[in-house]
Length: 78
Image (tube, helix red, strand yellow):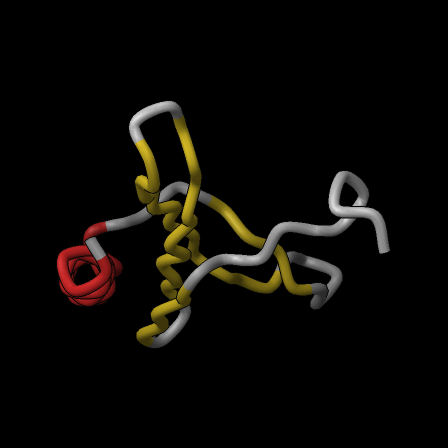
């Protein structure tokens, strides 16, 4: 498969309950750097799984936990 058409995958993914942190490895003019995206999975009214980047108060503990795990991964891989 051609590298331009390949789907990029996260370098690492961390999950807690329905919260996910995906760590993305990128390369720039100054070398490798990382970015992190966060999402929450939920079922819609038709019982289909969806993802959102919106979080409620009950999600914050899990969000903090996966953010911490992502930070540790980045620090270890710098």
